[in-house]
Image (cartoon, rainbow, N blue to C red; front, side, top):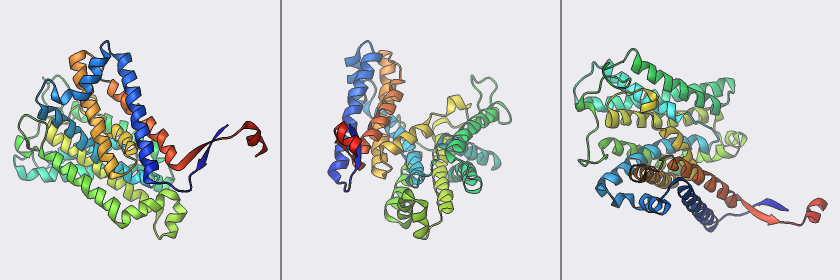
Length: 363
């Protein structure tokens, strides 16, 4: 029989071995997926691996990859704060939507100004709006002991429908537009391009600055230690002098703020206006959950996982256009990677032991 025996000690080699095995499994299964979904699998594999050096200018392709990386890494590290303490916020997509809504609402409240000085105000409004939306499941968890996983997920759909309602109702813009959307922001309040012709803009610098700031807090401050203690048991957290309820509030506040920041940047840099949810939301919030776990909840791992998933997503879009391969292949590879990394993570904490059935019965 096969059983798992907890490891008494773990090492860097154990972690590296699990990661390398997960990467190998992901690569092999991804190749298999492409063989099934494409009539020209070898071309699809090659183009997905080398797409930045094909077709369009290299800086354009890498700009798309880095753009997605910034959004995903920013949201994922916010989610990792709660996951470290066994607090499960999976509603970042809704908090992202409210970040955009809050930024646009601030623009209207200020009278639709045409000044670059308004840009920081919109970013701050997005952060507060995302934080506000995250506080709802936190409040229900603390006061009613409601499962935050379910409430945060359900609020994603509330936020999505609210976004669509605003676009078809009170904030409806040009009726001749082919979709429900608001009037656009003034150009002066939008994020500016860093490199002309690419997707790199000043909003990405804000996202990465927030990422590294939160990473430093998690790695080098008392908060990081507090979350590590909370990951084991609430009782240990109380013995260390921390309040489990305050940890819930703090975790949701930080994750909601990071998602709201990403939503505000997305509004000011990418679209410039609110659009009905199905055409606006890019599933960054759900993808960030995968990335948080692929990165093992460590800031460096999250950054590398975000880069990997972004590369796969942009590559899938490229082969969809060039080889007519369904870009849902990127979603399949994400799922494969998640299960491979979670499965191999067991090797960090357990050893596989083989015993005879007779010995197992005796035991």
